[in-house]
Length: 511
Image 1 (tube, rainbow, N blue to C red):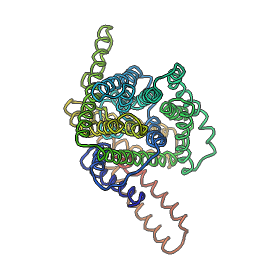
Image 2: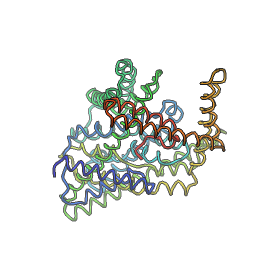
Image 3: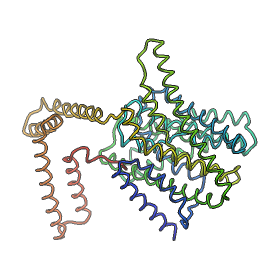
Image 4: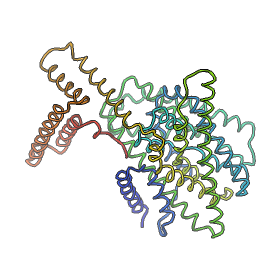
């Protein structure tokens, strides 16, 4: 089987898994993790070699750009204390504990064991976003989890780089330590500068295709240039995305935004698929190369590390929450989120792309590389499968299901948007104003209790659009227009139909 044929089969399997995940209301990253484990156990599947230097930017940069663009700077300012505590403190504590176990139990050199700790420490941005998007939990918890999964990648990769350098070079010089210390602020500054320069440079790019392509090119370029400058590529990409989103005073056209959302969703999903399945293939090669006793010892060690990763996060989340509660009570301040939200946040520590990709790039002569890679893979499986599949029952058990509240809040905001349009039309005159006002008032009534008028409007509009599509097809069959003109008119009808359909049916997303 050729590489191309194998990739097609893998992507077809991913489509099937996505259908299963949707019908069973399961997070698709958990299904991908199970598929990766299946690939690891399936004999005869082909191997996909990948350049380690390509793995990190290929798999991580687009996921970070996609997640960070939708994470506002105002949220970072609002929750900066828990974000720093979890994204930096959580990574360091987890890495040190895993490093100690690797040194004491698996006889790894401490620097090599710390490399393993840095690999398994950070929860993943893509996994958290994918899983949380299908659920409704308290807004503060949701924001902290999404923000943490962006910034902890930087802390983990800096620690990973320092520990790997210490392992391969036998230690760190003062110059290297200074370089790692400057990598984080330097990466943020570099990303902000590019984010301020990038929009004016691309004003001449107005097409949807070239605009989307330029977004990907700039994302990868920022990552690669930051690496060459010995800056944090993670923070550079995150700062780039947030700067562009914040400085976007002249929003792009609806056409560019809709296509951009769709393109980024499918690209991030495909990269998730390839990362999980390729890691499964690499784990299979390691499994087949281990003797029985060595494999049992490696699996036992992987189980211990997985337990440490899960328990450490839960203890840290609840401990920090209780400390903040004690501090606020002492100062007479408003209490923080209850411990139930902290427990939920602790259970949301799914590992994914970062753990997989950093395991990819370990050099072949790394001490006990097979054990380290197998352990990383096991942690991803344990967290995504065990925690990911039980997250919905956990939310219900803790009484944190916010779907009803979220729906009421969404309806209130939508009513405010419609009312803003009605208010704007209040001082206008003419038949056009009356027709627009009637349409908006039907939508406002539908957001209350009366839906009859709006449903009738939609039914008539969709019937009219169906008649237009039939007329368009007849014109095409009678050779009255070119293929380009046909596609242009068909697209116009599609936009009109999207404007008529209920908003919940037009959401763009992988799950």
